[in-house]
Image (cartoon, each protein chain N blue to C red):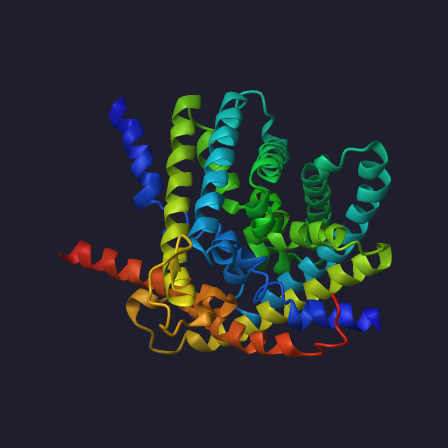
Length: 201
Length: 196
């Protein structure tokens, strides 16, 4: 019994990592990965929304008519996103301003709808919650990995703490738009390479 | 003047794909062939322009009137979902081949963050009804331009010798990154006359 939940959790973080394996949720991943702190808070919000929307959708899975399930899911997701949006605006005002439009856009983050459709609509409430936490954690970890490369190389800092010496020439392009695409592409390639190697080994 | 500046800003300077990172999923998913890319771009253009207008009306005549602006996300996404359903039915009737080619990505326009993104940005930047629609149209043209260019490059990429681990998505991202460098050059365009 316990193993099933553990497997769902590790699936979300490693084997089916939403960003690296399924390539979902790329828009926020590119946009907020310019600093590790942004990635961390974005990841936290996604964990919250994903877990609670998964639980509610799983609880209502026998009541939602099949034909209008997508609009139902979207309304449930949008409700939780509005909750985080207002919470962030009240308690984390600076971060709310930095992440800006990408907070309401969690609604259209493909990961959440994909999990609702492919997991929460078929599994128990507890199992769906675990899946939400696992997928959310995987997304957060992926965001922070990409953000680490970008922040260290582009700004010389990690979590706003200076890690490279002050005179070190930083590649500003890394925290700008082109750096986002190229870093994510190279990290994806690296992960493909590592998985290919570990399979043959 | 403002008309032209909004148009140029939407297409080049604040290109939704390369500068704002909105609508990346369909940008990567439907950019294998130029023909489908253009079809997708046109469908998105229609949805974004009309959605900009409708959500503007809803924001000003429903949400603001009843003092419930916090319902914005929920209300907007429902409007967009309905609109996409409508476009889907029209394309299915008029062009079954395009309908087949767009496949699963057609209903997914609902979850194209560019659409919800542009409607929220319209409200945030206080455009009036006309400029909100112009802005939506311009942003969509930027998307159409980006996805068409990308499809052109990817058609060529199919015949090139790419390292195995970079095939597919990784290479697409790197290509997009290099195109973003080019679009980065537009940042300095019309600096003094563009006050957006």
